[in-house]
Length: 363
Image (cartoon, rainbow, N blue to C red):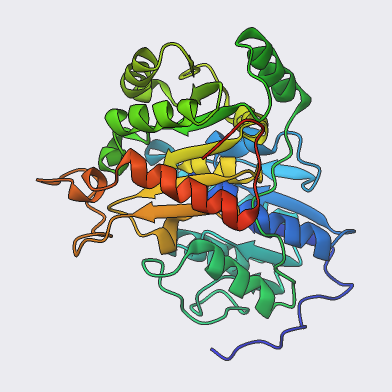
């Protein structure tokens, strides 16, 4: 398929746009950089977002979208019924342009079927040249290229400037108030605490750096001048969070299982810094535009790093890194080789390079 002219899609005829991004949570958050670019490029267009029901709450007060379409197209018990519903909704939407940021076989087939059944979508943007997309930058392998690079290449070919450097989330006032209440309850002062993300989903537990390392780093950060470390995570990460909190009881605040997704950004915005594993939560933290260190082992930093120049990654130098063995490994050397001292040093370099400052912190 030939590449389209770089200005064909951007014109006054684009009035209704559908953006498709189903999962996973980290990728959905990462895609908000593209959502922002689209909203800026088409300020007068009506933009709809199609995502899974689990992620619809991320956009409940997002004025970039006039409609959130949350049909669970992956529900095994209702896959055919929901696929038919999806096709009908897209066909009825009479969209001028669809931006498919999912670009899987399923999304391509469903979009193609909607088109065959009369959707009449003139511009269909994806990051692969296969049918039904008519604006595509050429095939970019999902397993070697960062997702944001693929997204940006696709919209730039349509003449849409990809300029947003990091995720943009619209935080409801309710969550801002919740975080302020938590800060008051635990005497957390802005700029005086570090945020730690020691977990990740249980299915990829080998991406976890380990409670002992977080304990060691937390103690060093406290000795360097931070008053508190704040630990957050889901309920299936509570064991590690509790262990860190118990070992750092004098200065740790354990909020594991107590925060909502939309609490994370305001909590991170007031943190001096964040340290975490390769996890979807890290992409939300990157929206806060504060210093962040991501510890990587079996996953490739070039593919998983959250967006923004406020984020750096740390990975051991081993021949077996980037193996993506996130559930089974005989030695887990990629994480064992990264010490709290190494993480502390990486944070010091980040602060020096970007001229970050937190009162009282002496890294």
